[in-house]
Image: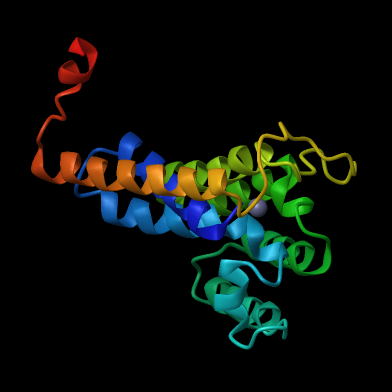
Length: 197
Ligand SMILES: [Zn+2]
């Protein structure tokens, strides 16, 4: 699935679940990053192009390890969280696309890192990452949910980059902005008008 579709789905779901306007900005940033994170295992993905800086060079790997060291040094990460982060990044960079980072093992590692460091980010992180896996499950390529078992699971509904993928992104973007409007203005969307039709 396209990176921007993942981002739109993660943001729309978070804006629907977390309705407190004060908690929403931090939640949206967390969910946005989490919704892109699983595709760090693919060098042409939206998140990898940002982290690697120079396309085609896996510069992001040493940069993330340096960031990991400083997060541990300044006590944001415990030693175990720092080790798990390094393991996650290692698997992401050096195993194939839609494998570890798209599996229960990768999801659990990611959640454990947050449980050990910043529980405040847990709910939007679970939403962002979880919705990425659900969305990729719908595609023809599927994902290796039970990694290291190599079988791919999926519902084979559409291709990544297809018109359906793009349409889902557009609908999710619309829902995201509608929910933002709803949350920040306190205005109730008149759902009854739909049910009356
Ligand atoms: Zn993916």
